[in-house]
Length: 134
Image 1 (cartoon, one colour):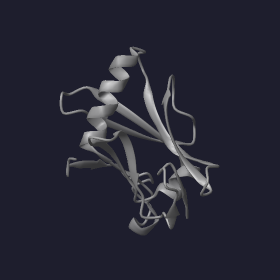
Image 2: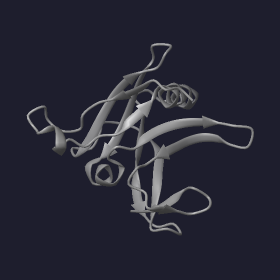
Image 3: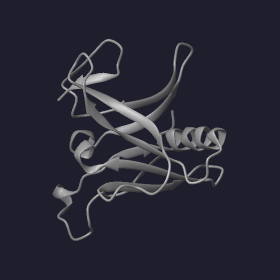
Image 4: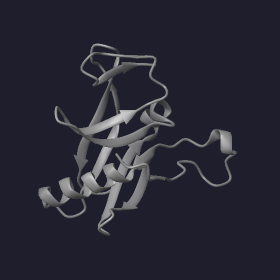
């Protein structure tokens, strides 16, 4: 995993520092997103991350492709992979309340390969690691 991460504040610059919401997207995740978007081959594809109710612990993480323009209430992260490809990540503001301060990482081990949230707001999670409680 890379210790290098990109973070963009999700609130206007005029907001007090304590009121800003945001996530950190590790460079390893940015590079993995660039690879997945290139494989998909659809121009303008972004990665949407968020949460929705459900799962064995209450909330489940959402990571899916998004084609077209961001929704009006999305927070948009425009980043660049280490190879220079542009990468766009979208987070809806409601999900950001539960993801604030979380890091999206790309994990590659002998047993698993995929995106992983390190979320300081989690109070408990299920054994499979895809759902959590706040």
